[in-house]
Length: 209
Ligand SMILES: N[C@@H](CCC(=O)N[C@@H](CS)C(=O)NCC(=O)O)C(=O)O
Image (tube, rainbow, N blue to C red; front, side, top):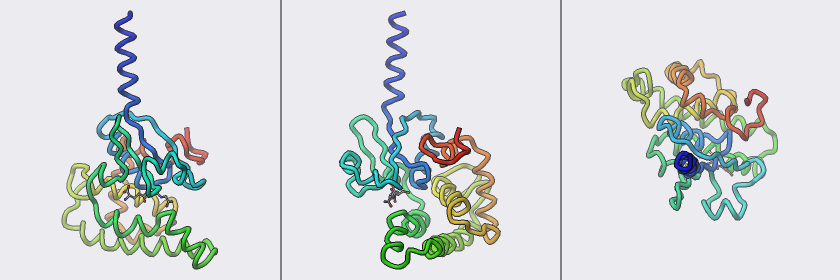
């Protein structure tokens, strides 16, 4: 019995070794949640409420001085950028997500207009601009997934951005048939489903279970 409980203890310590600082709606965290799920890696979910500004708390900025999620902590190793965790899918990461990030939208609200429609139009504009480019770029490469018939890095970046476009920014996806088809494929995979914002422990959405 003693050795069993010791094994169990080791197992639970191992499970708790990985900690993901995440926010339910964060597309950058969503990328990493998919990757961890695909790898079958269990992690402790550490919720950082971006809407309440918890990313600027001293405890969090100790881990990531720029105040962004995700942060993955593996023992003594702290990885504070989804690129470092996953490598690249550049259009989403450089030309779409930063332009619809909470920090950008807040700046527009403070410096340009407090009308929520202005923020929404901005987010829609840059999302569509990126999606138009992606539809063209992926047309000769896509299979079931973005770059073939296997899930690869581009899919980890695309799925969260398409999800945000639909659920958060109300983008008309009929203009993007290829991305819509990819989104349907993502929605069938458990690793993607379990990483979705509405399934996270910190989601305020009623559908959370
Ligand atoms: N390059 C970073 C970007 C991280 C990032 O922009 N995170 C967003 C959530 S998706 C965030 O924490 N935003 C907080 C804010 O805007 O204050 C990465 O890929 O991890």
